[in-house]
Image (cartoon, rainbow, N blue to C red; front, side, top):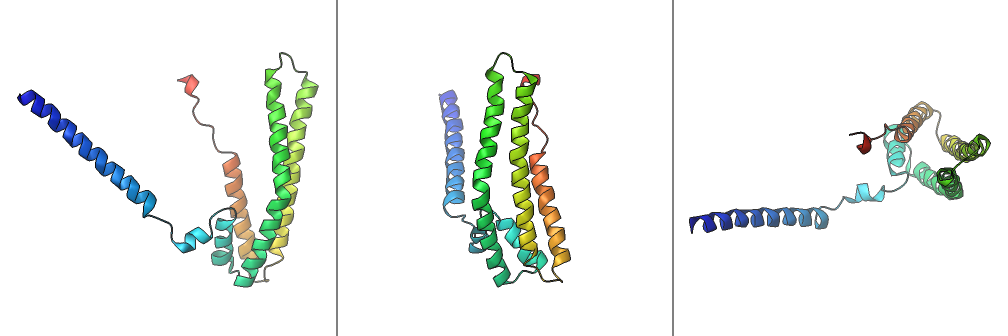
Length: 168
């Protein structure tokens, strides 16, 4: 009898722990919403807008102009990202072939590189346009912010590979 009571007690404690965990998750997802300031700057460019406002000192008018430039920039880039994705897909589809000549492999890799060049040139031009919004006093701060943003983008692209689960 004592054994059954002890087993049910453990199950009861586990049920209570699970119930509390579920309530915490429910609270987190329902009531823990971001404040308006953070949610208004979410999405592409939200962090950059905050940097431009806080570190560079962009005015409301400059931020509005930046938002227009950013939206135009992403509209121009969308097709390029699609082309880059397609070029990479085509490159890795070559893995399905038994034998791929080096010339075909290099041509496919060059295609990826050409698409990336287009994206980088468009991004460079975009930042030159945004730089044109700056006052002379803001230029040093802007240049610093752009270098910071580009380093973050490059670190994201060059993040170290995860440990291969097959090597364990």
